[in-house]
Image (tube, rainbow, N blue to C red; front, side, top):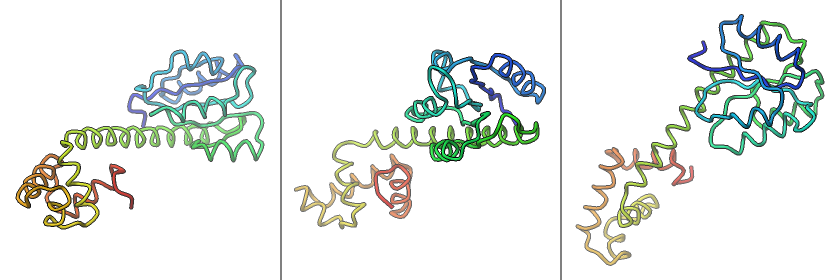
Length: 205
């Protein structure tokens, strides 16, 4: 499973980069190598799906610092840490920061392949979620200020009559705004409206 994904390799060891690129290519995957985090960041394309095989100890910027920088971006490839120094604190930090796996450079070909495949799956899931978030932001942004006012009260269980009193409008106006916002959000019931609002982060679970 690759789905057009690229395996990005960031390691300051030229020989290791070259051999790993050959190995990844032999797995039927596209490989692209960089000798430093800076070099990788200079060409970074958030729209490029893939997995990042990342060394930890590098002279100008550590792999974990690069991981932090990428985590601050809206979307980036899934990360597999691949290092010659398997230290527990480093591994824990990498995993807490969302690494798919933490492998030693002596890992077997099958271990590496499995980690890459998990990374590709994670990356695809992350990108699908990101697109869903963008879509939810878009549809909620289409609500008018008046409709958003009604939505806020509806989500807090306030009945239409009370909303009308709070906003100083007629009950019919509230009902019309409520109908329009539900149409724009493509929901048919209050339960669906609540679920969508929770998914969009507008209402806490």
